[in-house]
Image 1 (tube, one colour):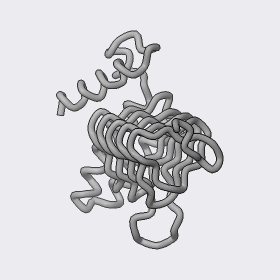
Image 2 (cartoon, one colour; image 1 turned 45 degrees about the vertical axis):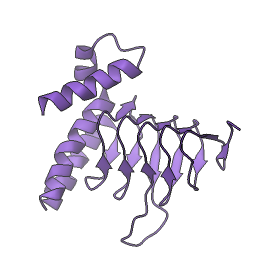
Image 3 (spheres, rainbow, N blue to C red; image 1 turned 60 degrees about the vertical axis):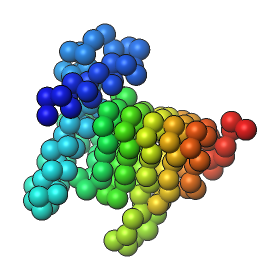
Length: 170
């Protein structure tokens, strides 16, 4: 567990040029705290302590400004820069080494108990205030521009931007 905490902290230090050290990140970065809190809430969820998982995730949201449903799946070294306003829905799946900025929404587009939130594969970067909706996949190492609205799959390595999001790296 301590190794995972160090790994998360080091990932943020590596990705944020404003970070003055890993101790600062561990003590003051709300996005890091939100991911750590989610790891606890997710374990509670998987152990079928669903109410406690939801209550704990609510407490984490109050403290960090980041709302992550305890059933969401989050990989290793996931970082949320600035954090405030990030919402990650119940069936979202986030791979390893994903980096998101404030205001990102991984939202659902259906009112049914099915996979209805995005999947972000390894190495994805999502700009501030981007909205990704529905059971879509953002491929490995893709980039979503700030303020974009994404409702379709994004190929691996692509860069998309705009409303609606369109590929801009061709």
